[in-house]
Structures are given as C-alpha cells and as structure tokens.
Length: 445
Image: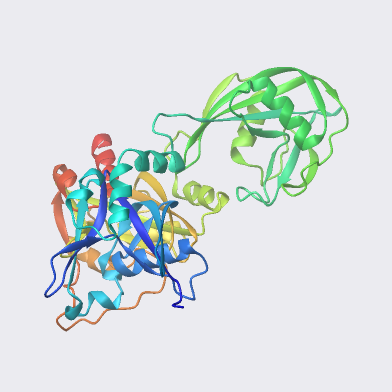
C-alpha cells in the first residue's frame, strides 16, 4: 500500500483577487496552481506547512487562515486554507523549483474567484469550490478578521468600592492580553442578546461569585487601542452587593486587591485607569486613545496584546511620489523587522523619531508567531534618494532567509527601489493591503 501524501494549498486573497501561479513547462499546455506544497516532517501543524510554503514560494506573510476545503484521493489528501496577503517580498523566495529552468516558469497572476473555471486550475475540485464560494469565502475571512459593517466591541466594567472607598482590581494572567497588569474586576464583553445591566451582573457572578443590583452607568468611554481596534466601554456602579468578592477564575486572575482611586498600581491597564479616574471625577463620557499614537504607545499596546514580532513599513514620499521596492513581478513598501525595538526600526527607515502613523495590520509569521505590521509615512530625508532603500528590501520578516544564487539561468533580478506616482498606486503591483494604506495616507495628506 502506497503511503498517503498530504499537501496544503493556499487560497490567498489579495483584495478581491486570488494569487495563483501560471505554470509554463516545456512540452505541456499552461496550467494554474495555488501556492502550497507537501507537508514536511518538521511541520508541527498543517497551518505551519501553509506559512512555510507561502514564505518559500512568495516570500509572503498572511493574516489569519481558515481551513475551508479538503480533497481526498486514493493516495493523496489536500487541505486548503483561505487567507489574506499582508506583504510579499520575492527576494525571500527560497524554493528550489523557482531556480531550476527545467521545472518551467511560475508566473504570478491575480484572478477573480468567479473566473477560475475559465482556467486550467489544478486540482479542478479546488477551482470549482473557490468559484462556487466567490462571495462566501471573502465574507468568511472578513468575519474572522473584522466585520464588514462596523460592530464595535462593548465592554462592561463594574467598579466595586470597600468601606475605605478603595476600588477592587484583579491582576490578569493567562489571557494573552495585558497579562501581569491590573484591570477592573469584574469586567468582560457584552454578549449577543444581553443588556448592559445583564452582562455586568453575569460578569460579577462569574468572576467574583457575588450578586449585584441597582446597577447604573457612571461613565462611557469610546476607546481605541493604539494601532488596533476601537471599542465602547461601560463603567458601572452597584447600589447593592450581596456576598464577598472571591477570585472565581484563578486561571485568568492571579490575585484580587483593593487600591485607593488616587494611587492605582503603576501597571494598571491604561484604559481601565482612565475609566476609574473618570468615575472619580464624575465625567459621563470621554474619548480615550483617539489622539495621534506615539511610537512607545504603539509598541506597548502590541506587546500587551501578545504580538511577538513587529515590523515597520514606510511610505516615503517626495513631490507626489512614493518609494516602492520592485522586482520582475511585484512591488512592495520598504519594510524592516523591529528587532531592536519599534523606535529603532522607525528611525532606521525614516531618519526621524516622529513620522506620521498611518495604520497597522496583523499577520502570522512563517514560524507561527503573531505579528503586527505598523505603517508610517515620512518625507524623503534630506540628501537621500530612493536607492537608499535598497538595503532594506530583504527584511520583511525576522525568519532566517536562504539567499538564492545570484547567477545562473534561474536567478531572479535583484529588487530595486523606484519612485511611483502616489495617485497611480491603485493600479500598481503593491499588495492590496499596502495599496489601501497608501490611499489612506493620501486622503489624510
């Protein structure tokens, strides 16, 4: 009996299109394939195979991946994941098949899902599945990343005070966000079908084992995490509390403690601190986090949210043009990994400590770590040229890179920085995610 071969394919969306390879081989009609390949013994999971193949074949990083389709054949099992392209750097490409002319050409093409049946896409089952799901797959990805229509997260926070007017806080642990920092206890998210009052009473019972009544909203905050998403926070107080607060969720809370409102712990979640102080000062509503984000705040929030790899991309501009790094098939923004901290990476790219923050997007690195990419805009430094950005063209991820040979028939031409008219970015070869960020900068410019 032949051993079962297992492979993984990527349905890689770049905007409304899917990234494919057009395969041109001697003596064979052209055909198309999705990025992907066989599972290797070193791959810990199927998603690890996906991330490795995207890196080897496209030098690509992608956002969250959804397992959407499986093809079962006599001696082969193929699993398909849907994901969105964040960044692509072909100079990172390391698959040997791209350097051997006898294996033919791999031309990168982008195709709308509903057009796949017009191509000789292999395997045909995958082509039919993606074409049938032309509307469904993007919607699934949107739901996994962020809803298409804005639906903010709503938080509830109950401020409990003891006889000395101290507020109860809990030190977070094991949650993946702000672990080791102090947060209002109880607090949580509003669930579908709940009122603010019901959600607060539920959180009090679940987290502290108490019953509360006479709940009123003392403060409302429209909060935005630096570099992240926005939410609405409801800070409430209770007229009646039955029971003694106990730590009912020790896997999420390391300890409970009472603190004077005017002397909160240094490591209090900033959003929680702002809400407590607003209640103290009888402020009914406030914006929090909507001021221009500083680089230290962006980095602190990314670390608080559990991101293990940070990268920086730059929109460097001059006289209506932006710098892109170009190779034979793609464009990309100059990008570096923040190995020595976000501030150092930004300064290396811009020569400035205060460039304009444009936006951020999240990805998963080739080795499976959660990453956040920050995009800044800055004018071309005095005395510089686009060619100065050639030295950063190979630093889009922190993972080790195998340098391809610089000579030979299969070698690709080196990537080169060039000026691109900013108004023409929509028709460029930049990934859709980067085109969107440049367009945002243009609107704000």
